[in-house]
Amino acid sequence: MLNRRKETGLLAAALMIFILGGCGTQEDPAQEEPKNLKIGVSVYDQYDTFMAEVLSQFQAYTREKEKDWGIPITLDIQDADQNQLQQNKQMDDFIEEGCDIVCINMVDRTDASSIIEKAKSNDIPVIFYNRELVKEDLERWEKLYYVGADAFQSGEMQGQILVEECRKDFSSIDKNGDGVLQYIMLEGEAGHNDSMIRSMAVIQEITESGYVVEKLADEIANWNRDQAANKMASFIEDYGDRIEVVLANNDDMALGAVDALKDSGIMPGTEQWPMILGIDGTDVGKKAVEKGEFLGTVLNDARGQARGMIELAWSIVSGRPLESDLELQEGKYIRLPYRKVTSENLSEIQAGQTQ
Ligand code: BGC
Image (tube, rainbow, N blue to C red):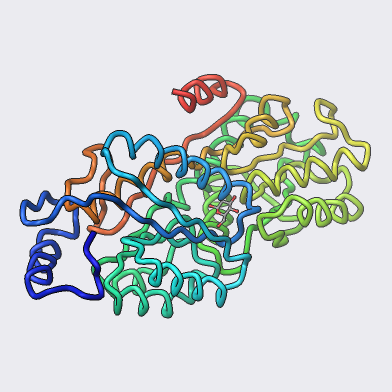
């Protein structure tokens, strides 16, 4: 591997060709074929259900790719424990260890300066994932990339699932028969792109489809099942039967709502059970669709994102072209599509994910 901090003039020249060649997405005959690959990975919180799925898929893909590419791949996976300073320090460790590339799931997506500066001065490309940086930050250096999904699409699809159900049987959703959908919104995290955009897009989709909504309450529960259950318990006390729909920015919070409803004696399948919708399609989320606890969820493609990260990492480091089905938008972004998940297509989705 190239020691990026001690480049000779010749290697620097080769690197220039690599940059001009489009940051590893175009084949570059001048680039030396790597004999191994070392990737530093930091996750904002290893206990986040969705992130845990992304990382386990990433590890699985890495093992597969070692065989395909015939090289050893070393992963150093670190938990930032929701602490940005700790994550900045992890970046120092990755540099120290000689990582060829790093994948960072920012703790605070608005505070990427330190990581970007360190990456730039040590010439180590960064693939940010899941927690999308503002565009201006991503444009600060040509070797910064993002792998994730389009937040708007997930909110829109969540809205579509509810709208499709309303079209089938509005009266069983509008329990009090006032023609208005009374809803609770459980939001992920202040300042998180996915939270802000999903919350806005879902309501836009429902109202633009001609339904009238009334927000009973809207609270942040930090993507977390227990926090959502606590909030939901107090909403049940305040609004009881008036709750017709629960829109959660992710499956874990939707499951928190399920927990609180069951604790208060309201059971799935009964008339009092509201329509509950999540996002992610995690294993536990899909189970909730199967049990009829959720009306639906939206698959956030952990598997596809993990694949996108490893393929992009290899393309950047080796100079080989990116797999043709992965589109690198604006030379920087890979966004995997979301998919609606309801009881109607659950088995098809599950079969697709085990292929
Ligand atoms: C997922 C959440 C997750 C969050 C972490 C979102 O895209 O939907 O489940 O907690 O990312 O950043």
